[in-house]
Structures are given as structure tokens and as C-alpha cells.
Image (cartoon, rainbow, N blue to C red; front, side):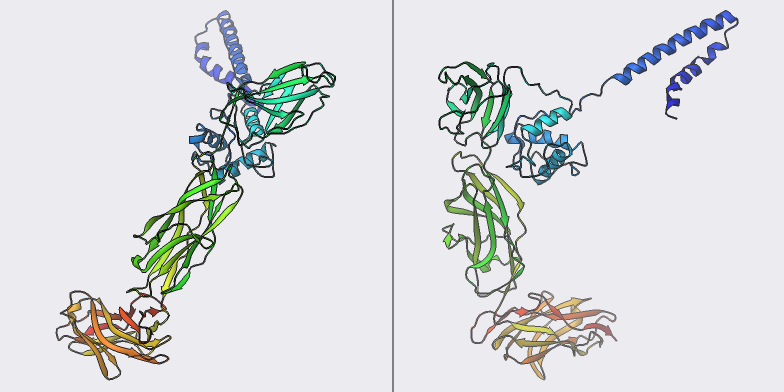
Length: 569
């Protein structure tokens, strides 16, 4: 089947010329047409062969990379090379299935680079800081050039061939210096220097004296050699070149031969800080608690190129509308307050903790901070609070460069609900009917509720009764009873809302269960077929001894509804 395709052009060509045969009247004319047709077919076959032998073009998204790229870098600091790398990786879904082009070298990009390095036999284990696994360094960049079909310049017959012109090296990363020994000496000393362009500052990479990089004498027995070096963190940004000089053993101080590299650049990477949260589960906090811990945060400078200076920390705050219950919020490092003035949340949203003095996180180290707030001893509702680490404002202590903050390990903070030590317990009584009917003009039981005090006698000043149903005007009044004793009464038509306050001035004895009965008095013209329910909740109560606010527990802030009533005639 495969071989039959090669005859396709011939068949097509024959079909195209078939009409011309019908006009051939003599044998000579027919032979002339056949000869012309064969010549044209041969021309077509030649053209097809030429097309088949044309090499594939270089992929349009092959990147030109000069920076060492690694996690935390952005387009703004690399001349858009992070985006170029991501576009290249995204061509292969097995390498970069997410295919996100963000301009930020994050965790997904690092994983994609690792897959690419393993696939193309660059490196398959280790760390970016040790083997380069996950970072696009010199070896990976050279391999990308090979994969893209870009010819990697061959080793020169004489001179320094790596670094190459235009390379941009980042301080503290390892690179190779490679050269060919053109001295013709089988045994020689060598000195290798890093030279600052213009300033002519000389840094010894290999030599017999101490230096900022390394020291020692290398015995050259081969025509070419290489070694890795780490640009020192105290280097200035700028242009540099490599100078290699050879010496005879006997004439060590006399230069026999010197070679130099092309000019390249050394730059500082942006300082990097990783922030994360220490897990705290959702929970409760007693009202009146001082210095309650709402969050623990870790600032990690393990990947930083220098010490990191932190000036402020942003933390997102959430509540259910009762933020005034919190005050005196401080960030602590151990027992030290980092902000002098205690913060009071000003509503849901990001709150900025400005540090009284900059917090320094040492290169390679970390700091653990705690967020603590004071909780008011009472509130009209049942609040909850949540604090989630949002961002950190930081710079390099030496360079003053803005730090790249990695927030991939930040998780949502715990939801903390406030409870009251002297709370009372409320629930729908088992004797309360789920549903019932009520006639026009009737006084009917609308619900029964069991009430008990948790730790001391509880004084309830008033209880709101909430109406839900067809028409509030179907009721004349509602009342609350303790057995045969009426505790409170509210006029329904007199209320401007579905919530009516019944002042009862009632004490719940500790360790005793009381059953409150809510009754509804229907008017004589109540809507037949209508329905309604009544529910209760505590709005103002306190412990008789402690006089601090008490609150319903179990479902804080939730209205408990009684019997579903249907109106009949």
C-alpha cells in the first residue's frame, strides 16, 4: 500500500492529459504527445524528490536563553526569557501538560523542566542547587539548542570557548570555564582569572594564592580542560571576561601564553523568600481570651542569595460582621511583638501589619511568627474569625532588591468560632410537634424548647421570636411560657418586622432543664390554608454570677424553629 502512493502523481497526470489523446489523429501525433507527457512526469518526480529531501525547519518557538532560569524568577528580571522557556516546554504535552504561559517560574515550570531534562538525558535527579535538576542552566540551555536544531559552536582550537559572548551569569550559581591549551606545553602551571571589564578588577579562579573563589595549581596534561566556579556574592553587576595564562614549571613567573574569553555579564538574582503556614485546625476560642493564636507563619530564606529584610506583612481577615470583638492583634516572634501598635481589624479584607523594626531572615534560615489577638468577653452574636497569610514586603539586606515571595505553600487560615464559658444550651424539645393545624381565632402551641445552663445560673433579659410563613398579619400576638407562667407577650401587628422581642427577665438554674413553650394567638380572619412557624434565639443574656454574656451553643447564632402550623377554618 505504501509503495502505491508513489504512482499517484503519474495517475493524476494521466487523467489530466486524457482529453488530449482524443484529439490525436495519427500515430506520429500520439507518439509526440506521449513523449511530452513522459518529460513532464519526469520533471514532476524531480520536484517531488527535491521537496522530500528538504530538511524540516527549526521550530518557531525555540528560545534564545542567556539567563540561568530557576524557580522564583519572572519575565521582568530575565528579559521575558521565562515566557520563552514556557512556550518551548508547552510544545510537548508530556513535558508540560498544563501549558501555562505566565512569565513566572513557579512549581509547574520547575516540574516541566525536570521532565524535559530527564527525557533528553540532561539530568534526572538531585536539586536545582546541586545537580541543576529543575533549573535551566548552561547544560540545559545547550541541550535546548541541540534539540532545536541550532548548531552549538564547536570547541575552538585555541582559546576560551565558555562562557560565550552575551552569557548572563547569576551570582552564586555554578558555571563552567572551558578552554583549549594552545601553549604547546605538556607540563605547565595555569592561572585563571575573572576580569572586570573597564574596572580591570582581577579575581583569581585558579592560582597558587588565596582568592575570593578558589586556589591551587592545576597540572595540565591534556590539550583541553574545564572546571566549575561560583561567582562570589560580593561581585558588582557588570561585564567580565576570563583570562587564562600558562607558565613553565621552571619559569613560573614568566607568562608563556595567555588567552581570553569573550565578554559576558554577571548579575545578582532577586532575593527569594518562601512563605508558608503551619497547620491549625478549625476550632473555637472562649470569649475573654487574651493573646489567642489565630495563625502561625513561616518565612523561609533557604533559597535566598542574601539576608532578607521584612518591613510589613499582609494578612487577609474574614469575619461574619462582628470584628469589634477582636482587639490588640500583634505578630510575635517568640515573645517579641513585631508591631508596636495593636491592630484592630477594620472589616473583612487584607490587614497590613507594619513592623516596628525590620525583621531580618538570615540567608539559609527561617523565622516562625504567630498572630495573636484579644477576644472581647461578650458580643451580641456568635462571631467567627479567619486570618490567612497574604503577602510579605521584603528586600535583600545588602542589595535592597525587591524579594521574590513564593506563596505556593500558603493555605487558608483556620476558622475560629467564639464560645462563651457560661453559655446556655437550647434545643427543640422532643415533645414539640413537627407539624399541626390551627383554627382561626385559636391560641395554639407553636413550639417547645428545652433550655439549660452550662456552668452557672443564666439570666435571660429578652428573647426574640421570629415569624416565617404566609402572612404575619394572621397572628394577633405571640407569648412565651414556663409551664403555666407566662413570661412575655408581644403584639404581632405592632411589630415592624418578622422578629418580635419578648422581655421575659427569666433565670435558668444551672444543671436544670427548663422547657419554654411558645404560643401563637391567631386572629379570627386568619388566611385559611396559610402556614407559619415561630423560632427563638437569645439576644441578651448573662451569667448571674459572672455577669458576662451568655450565648446559645450547639448552633451559635442559629434560630431554632418550632412546629409547622397550617391554618384551618
